Image (cartoon, rainbow, N blue to C red; front, side):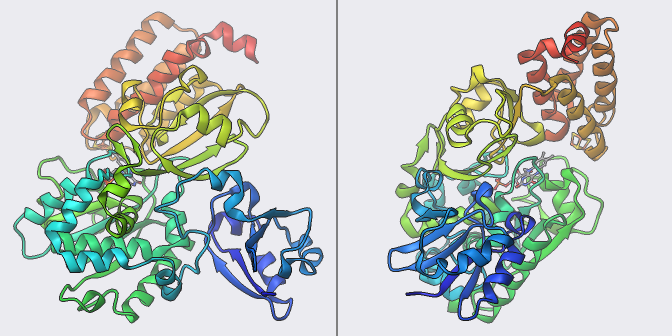
Length: 511
Ligand SMILES: Cc1cc2nc3c(=O)[nH]c(=O)nc-3n(C[C@H](O)[C@H](O)[C@H](O)COP(=O)(O)O)c2cc1C
Ligand code: SF4
């Protein structure tokens, strides 16, 4: 009978008391507790697991008060009201295709031995063996597109940087994760940081970069600490340094912590911020792949994009490409948040419909009231009503309905939501977060708030609605970056799908 257990140290689990639970379990004598990341089933956190002859058995959500009663049964995986059975058989996990998050919630995030034992470093070994051109070709053939929001093909980006002349090249990882309702980057950095290090090392070998930076948001102190500790462990083990895994490639990574401006997630602002300047959007061209950090060719990729590369190299391009639909290949870690019963991370091949994700997997709203709207893709994403829930999770399908999947966040709202308020909030957010470089965004967002206020107050509603549509057109086509350029999506979708919320009579009746 084993006395080895697993308890989460993920920030979401910590917020729900995981440290107190772990402390009590450790006091129980010979019970060895490994602290892991989260499996991403937040309503069951803190979820504690124990190794038994039948595999791991999970219990959750475990509160500190449950521990005394659990201690007698836990080591043998015995019966208890909180017993969930084998985690892999919990329907929420059983329905997933876990590639990028395969180890998250399972391994000790800071043990390279555990990482290796669960298939880690095979992708990097393959990249070293086959060389840059074959590595780039595999990533291109896999169909991987950037998971940060824009969905740009990763292989093409890498090829551009590899072909760009330059004595120094950089790999920059975008871990700013500013989108509302998203937490995939954070979960990976806390739960499986070596997969990101491995992905960055593969990118470095592919393009000939010797230095990498990870730009992490300051609101993620646990991710920052775990990732720094993983970097130290990687250096000690020769995974980073003068000869990566004993090869001729030199590569090291430094983590930098941003101050939390949404616009610093935009790649060129991020580069300015990394260079020690105020984060402001740069005009393109030049592309970062040609002239990026300190004027050198730079690959800038999201955490999930980079962390998806090791499995692609390990299993081959076809294995990854087989999953998904249309031009959206592979898997996407979808993050269910807001007013939703089963909030958490759900990794699956592209193609599930929005309705399946929100109602079946997410279980509808936490309040039990009808779902009225979901915002997909962060603060720049559109609000979708249930009548569009047949939309498959796919870059092109969302674009065809004036939406975007962004970083894969879905924020659900019940029938008490006021979409006019949400539209105003979009403008307010844009005004607060605008870098100020271009007029449509800097001034337009403030005018947007004012005009929405006039509409809901019933002041010349038709003329002001026309003005709002006109303003949104100007912002969409006249802004320098996607902050000002995409804010019209939440605004116009709120107006288009929920016009009644903008009418004063309706608003009075709803009070
Ligand atoms: C306002 C704004 C904020 C952004 N925030 C993020 C972010 O937090 N994380 C991210 O990976 N990409 C973000 N992006 C997208 C990046 O500019 C860029 O496309 C991405 O980092 C490229 O990596 P990928 O190809 O792997 O997605 C943002 C873009 C804009 C316009
Ligand atoms: S759209 Fe806004 S955030 Fe983007 S460059 Fe213009 S002012 Fe800056």
